[in-house]
Image 1 (cartoon, rainbow, N blue to C red):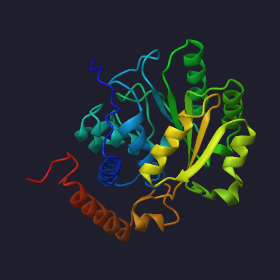
Image 2: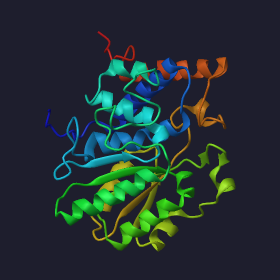
Image 3: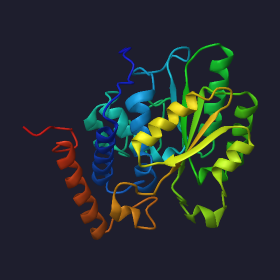
Image 4: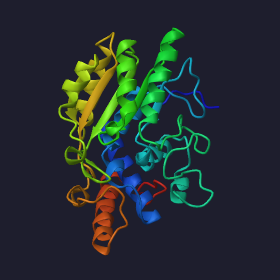
Length: 292
């Protein structure tokens, strides 16, 4: 097994563009998929995997490696793009998303995909497991860290709040929970379905270290993580102010973009976004070929 840690301190803005391009190509090739909530987590994935996480290819060692759990499992295609760009899986495997027998199902499955550390899909369960991992690691006196991303709509689930309360009680400062506050969920606007009110106030009241940053700015996300680790004794909650469909203006303005079966107009806009990102990153196609 390759034991090289992947915290390579990449150019985070460029890495985010690579992830977004790979994600769009992946979903465009599939013909449908979770565009909105995958695009809104691109920047945070770029920062976590581009700089902060210490992890090896293959199954992690709980005593040494950091853990990443995508609790909002429908964002799986974005995570697959990261894993392909960092060598956990082949780039060509992205073309098999959701195919019969694929190693890349719609939601992450640790038994199918190298680099996936927790099977997620049922919302709320991922953050609960992340809290349990953080508690076990701290109990063993190890310095591994746990990162997880939850959706704002996912926080409708009661078990999320039980987990957060548990984390605060046990002072799990080796845990960072990112909240993708893109303000929409499958059924509509989050504020209309179950008003979350002020996430920072709520998380602080629970006993957590909480802050909010622009979720499309890799430098602000990076600084927020550094600030979190400079605040010991509490679990860390970073609220990401994002837009569903982030980084593709057409999709940002498309209200029903949670799971998209593109119309011709949608396809044209996505193809245009892919072309722009290919030019910006020097990539020709999904395999990641550079221009000569």
